[in-house]
Every structure is written in structure tokens, then in C-alpha cells.
Length: 194
Image (tube, one colour):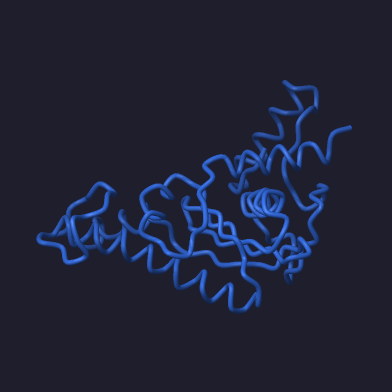
């Protein structure tokens, strides 16, 4: 299990111990991942980020960046040698949409879909443009910077619930894998089986 909500992590562990005779595992810093963690405090690394990095590297066997469009948008960078180097965390799309509708009373909630053009011809299209094209620009800009700092032509793999809406408007994403996180869980599980 990969969880980044501490209260739920404890509950999952109790369920695992009580109903599954201790079988299964929670992804954490003590698990074997096959990946050296090269950040200041490895204990700060969220399980979701580690799982995606492991899966992305397993897939490409070279420098890569996993971009996960979830509650937050995580960018996780792995070196050619398979070392986790760190990354970027930015506010997620849903959080941004909720904040906009809650903090700007005159602005409505909108569905996440691409507008006809970048120049919105009404409030709904203007918000959609800001979110879809704005986040696509964020992805392209951050990936460009990450590749530059890495000094290598990294493969970029996107995943997460909002990837399908944003990635078609990105120039820096090489592929989408909706199952990347699950693949990472499988890989880590296999490395830790008894």
C-alpha cells in the first residue's frame, strides 16, 4: 500500500496486521526499492513519489521524470544510474479550481476540458484556458528546467487523474501511463517478498 496521509497509513497498517495476518506492506523508507535516494532527508519522500520514480526508471532504464497529476502535481527526477534525485511539488489542478471558485465569488466552478482557443470568449472558457493551457505551460517549463539541471535527455512519463486533460497540450511529455503507480507498487512488492 502506498499512502501519503499519516492517519490513513496507520489505519491501513492496523487492517493489514489484524485481517491479513501481517501480510502486505506499506511503502516506506525501510523498504527495498532498488533505488538510491539522493535527497537531503529521505524520510520526507512521499511513498507516491517513490513508487512513481521506481516504475518510471524500470520502464525506461535511463534518466526519467515522472509527472503525477494528482492532488498535487509531482515531478520526480531519476538519474541515468537509477538514483532518485528529487523533484518539484506544485498545487494540483483540482485544488486550484476549488480555490478559484471559493476565493473569487463571481467565478463559477467549471469542468476541466480544453476550451476552443487560448483566448477565452467567456468566463468559463477563460478559466478553462487558464487551467488547461496554464498547467501545460507549467509542465513544459518545469520539465525543461529539470532536464537542463539533470544534464541529460530524460524520458518524461505522465500519470494521474488529470494527465489526460493536460498532456495533449504539452510538448515536453513523452508518454502517459495510467498504471505507473500500480506498476511501481508491484515492482517494490516483488523486491520485498519473503
